[in-house]
Amino acid sequence: MHLRLIGQILAQVSADQRERMTMSVERLNQSGDRIKESRRTMLETEELGVSVLEDLHQQRQTLLQAILPLHHLLRNKK
Image 1: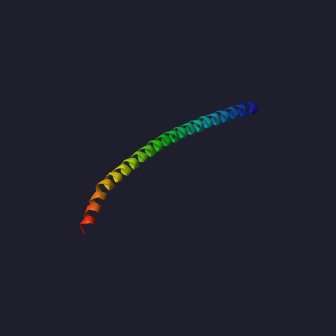
Image 2: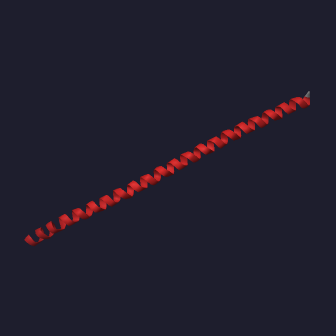
Image 3: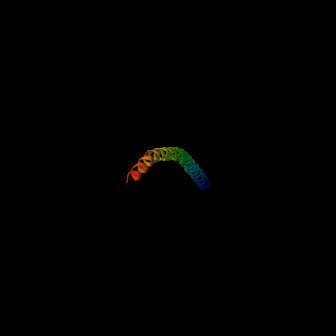
């Protein structure tokens, strides 16, 4: 009787351990998926930031090219 009870307890402990391990693996997989999604979002954001900086640089160059002749014209009138 004792051996049977011990066997049942050991079987239950093993089943509980398997269930906990399965849940842990599932959580790890979910965490890995979230990390992959975060990395994808980060790369997309970085790409967008680079594009915005390039646009701003081009706009600055355009403004400087428009302002510089005006600056020289005003300077020469003095």
